[in-house]
Length: 339
Image 1: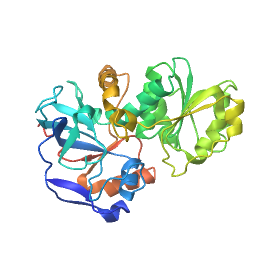
Image 2 (image 1 turned 120 degrees about the horizontal axis):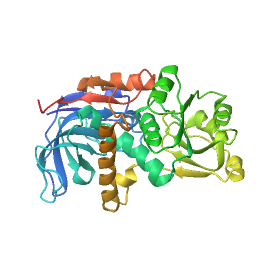
Image 3 (image 1 turned 90 degrees about the vertical axis):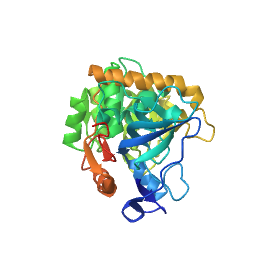
């Protein structure tokens, strides 16, 4: 099979190469073998290849954490999907290949009516936004939310989910195009991430500030955003796409009774040292079903902005780095294999 393989860590253009690679072995008892149609590209893809992500795979490895495709085979303990089913799935790595074995606990059936590219962002981007907002921050209808990086795949997912929940959404994005897109996806207001961020947000909330911040960016933007919080606000730390870990002024956290909530989606998918997958499995499956039903009802609009060939990973990562695109990017592996 063809796969995008990294035999060392480094710059993606230098170390990630498409080559012939052995197919995975028969699935173990709790595994599913999938022929991959499309796989997602994100900032974390580049960090993983560079060896800078939270977890480091053994070399050589195949990157890629989110994919959609068709089930080829199932281990003997797998009951919820069968060969021929269309599925979406998550893996710590390995999705940039024509075939992959994935833990059955992170494989979810795709409902009738959902297209490949419509389903692709749901497990990771939309799953991250949903679990962070509802399970970690416990956001309520009528509360206010500031979404940093609102033009990214995860940021847009957060905007859409929050709007569907009846939350007042303020989207923060770096370009007019991204801000307009966030408004079109359900944000009530859109602001720039510059020095006036806090004053813009306070003006939009009657001087009160927001109840929740969703932060996949970090860096100086987060340091400015913390000054736009309401009393008792919750800050969701999702990631550091800026490359900088923010320094939150703890005097502000003290006087405002702020809660800083670390969030790692891998806790719910079994990507931690203590595998809690079984604990969260029923809720995860219910959430994936809910997200698909919301999509089919038009409450959210998951999709892919741009696709690249398997050989185009470097181009995709470059576009992400230079903020040339909005929303979700994908590699076409086998494409529409059900034609």
